[in-house]
Image (cartoon, rainbow, N blue to C red):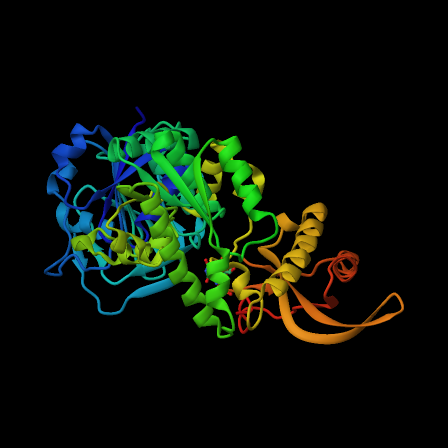
Length: 512
Ligand code: XMP
């Protein structure tokens, strides 16, 4: 059994990020409710405790407080932000209430490295987000680092193994923050660095089995990274108790359905039901041009088809979902805030609420890059694990204006040429997304000796970190030329190819 670090959650949005950094250090951790009794932590054999940040002041009436006994357990404690104020408050220091929050970049000067700052440069950029601050140290503590606004940005009572940091070491903006966390885990708590993706899978499998028992789980498989990894993980845990449903909405890319069938049915032997609902989708979309209306029709029809397939498999008790932590966002810990559940449901258009299914979300605590590692460890091919994002409404939002089978066919063929060239050149893996867009505009061209009057295909190829902003990718001209000439030569109905050179903002990545 791996040694456990307990992260007590006081309601910070960053608690899961702390857990993620601990995993990066290959140490096992568990997030606990802030009020978890010290006796329980002792029972579970925790080797160290991290007190998370939190939005409240320690003096607030509703401020979350830990069991004071946690300071008597004899295990090291690291307080982060609100966590350090709790230490001050509970151990005899003074915390000053201040109305102005200190928020954003700051500078840290390390005065006394000790175990926490061992091996780090003396000056570092840090990220702050706090209102109150410590003004008098508890007995036994010394200051180890100062920041622009605080003489107590880092504190320690090395004898008792108590450490505090006023800023946020878990966020990317704090230089070497993960080294501070590692120093606490390894240098102070002496935790073993033996927690790997394989261990995550073993734990998740055990959890899924315990939760599901003999029940059945239904999962909507889209073929994207998240649902694919969730399917592979659930299948590893419960095998035939899992049924996956793949809905062909007629808006898929070329050969998508055959690929999904081959991979999951033949390779993974997953009970995969492919529902061909394309005639229904296309009928409902006929003549619809407004993007939001298209999205609503596609979403609603998906829910209907999915519900029917649930009936046809004879019902299920659980709905599996590939929800990731960034989909959850809000913290649930304080007063059981249900916000995160609303978001989760929203993922599949309110499915579970209507279908009265219990949710099972084995990737709920992971970030995207961790999900990719899990997928690879479960044997999913690179093409799935590193797949570019694809919108739920599919080609429905890539055929501008009204959608017809003929336009979809042209788009599918043009997109297949683009993807082929992106794969062959290796650029597929280097950009965020690369896809073709169908423009319902006819322009004149010449093919052989004939005058043509055909449609336009736009190439949308972007670089991005998180899809919030994006820039068009500067691909080599000879590659663009090849893509363009192959599309106009190989795809009937296209006489012109254009390149989208807009960034986001102001343009979005998708055209509709
Ligand atoms: P935009 O077009 O908003 O896209 O810049 C940002 C990212 O989200 C994807 N996207 C969607 N994904 N359903 C989805 O599941 C949608 O309706 C949808 N619209 C956009 C888009 O491909 C890009 O990665």
